[in-house]
Image 1 (cartoon, rainbow, N blue to C red):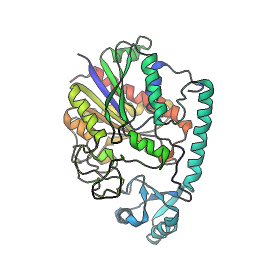
Image 2 (cartoon, rainbow, N blue to C red):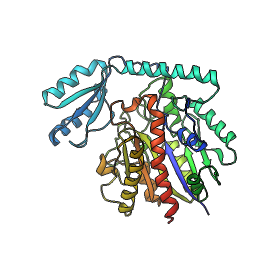
Image 3 (cartoon, one colour):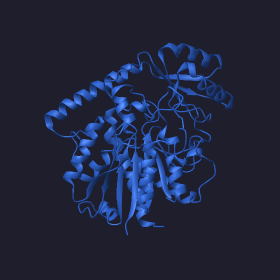
Image 4 (cartoon, rainbow, N blue to C red):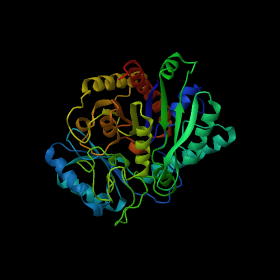
Length: 407
């Protein structure tokens, strides 16, 4: 019986590239964070990088985070003096926040002076790429795409490589959009390393985990990150899907405020997108690895997040994570920090890989891809292909270990 690997990602990022079929399959889930045609503007919004020097300054930043009237968007949360905090500030509150930081002697620098300028450039780059695609009738893996374009390419991949690739639906989103998975199976034949993997396992790619939120980033609010479900008793929309899993649900690092970016939802698995993945794994029955891809910070993490104790397989997971990070670094020198979620960033409850590990999937990992904050959630399209290439090396290292170490 074959083992199976489920790879889930909000995203990973051809024009002039000679891609092998297996690289096409990896690239399709590597750049799904972009957006265009935003109706909500971010003129004058700034992104600051803040560096706390001690625990007292961290507490001041946590206080700042609690001030809802400032409408702050913490791209990375204040948790430790060792970790910088990236913060998006609406234009009308920029001076107030800077005054707060300066009054407490907290150091900061400006990463993005005017967010709308960056978004306008991103939109123009997407428009130019779409014109080139229409002229060539090919899918450009080096740019960001709409959900419809991504789903159309999944159809194309399943048709072009029908001997090894199939597409199926595992559920529907809150707004009734399909959740499509690509299944890659059977002998590949052209690349010995890929063949050796597919002879022993099938690979499932869930290319867009939050399709409603992804569409919303294209049509309304480029910086949206939650689902689009309605919250009873609140005007605020959506849940953080990576705080909604049944793993220490509602604990530290998740918010009970529906207006928070880290709102955990009314109950575990309340989000149909999360429940669909849970159902797929539980019904399938032989998933050996679960790998989820996010942006950003260049981290490769394993459980736990909802508690700060080491998992039973700590030594093996840590060694495998470091081997994968070394493979990633071998291509372009991109460095990844490796460790458990709690020890690497902060305690965070309700996360997907904590659930998968507790469910019995030993090889559970979360990648936070490029970069470390220069562009953050606005990674330029020029970095999509390099990100995908290096990430594939890390994924391949993990899958080879899974193949050679059945349990």
